[in-house]
Length: 246
Image (cartoon, rainbow, N blue to C red; front, side):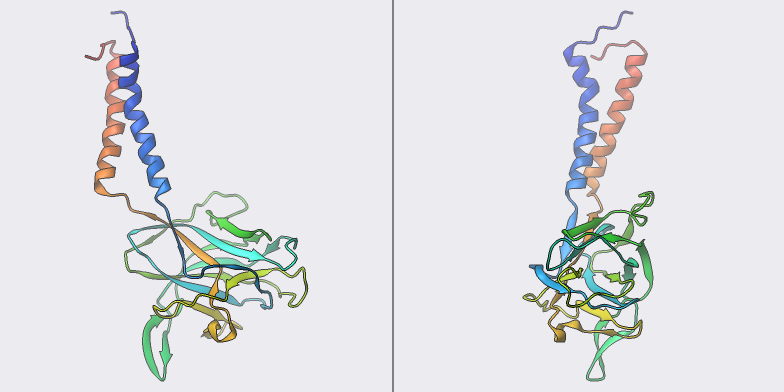
């Protein structure tokens, strides 16, 4: 039988594929960017770290999903500092020692188990630096850490070397001086790889650290995605058989 593909038949073939692509794009667009420090001040630069120090922010996942990226705000007063390679960006569980106040636990735990690390990230003096891979140099291992709604986790920048405090060209982690979360301890810094400390007393209201979460797709979206894929397979099979779609 001679195959006769009209515009209608072509639409039958392409429509399921387009639905699949559109749904995939919608899933990508639904990423959530979480921040507990706004606005980030371009002239507020934490540039006097020492090797091994860590500056971290506690996040609370608003939904089930995957942590798929991290944003770090990095800059200098001059705006033209050289790229700076730091030790790591760590995603950790909130299962460390409990924070205490007046000898009593306050209901929040310090960073503990490292769930994933972006190794040797290079930070540029452009403000926002985004990382999607654990290995930025080769980009073979995507960031993918599962979280549940209501789950606490930490993201921290682990410094390497020593900051050149006071120099105009000295880069560092940007922070906010105007926002202080009211829902518990959010910002911490670990000095000399010992205890975690509250940086708010020194004026660092919030580190320029953000988490990117890809929510788990709704069941209805998954069903439509599957139907679109099935439509492609069935239509392609019928075309191979030489049967004109009705």
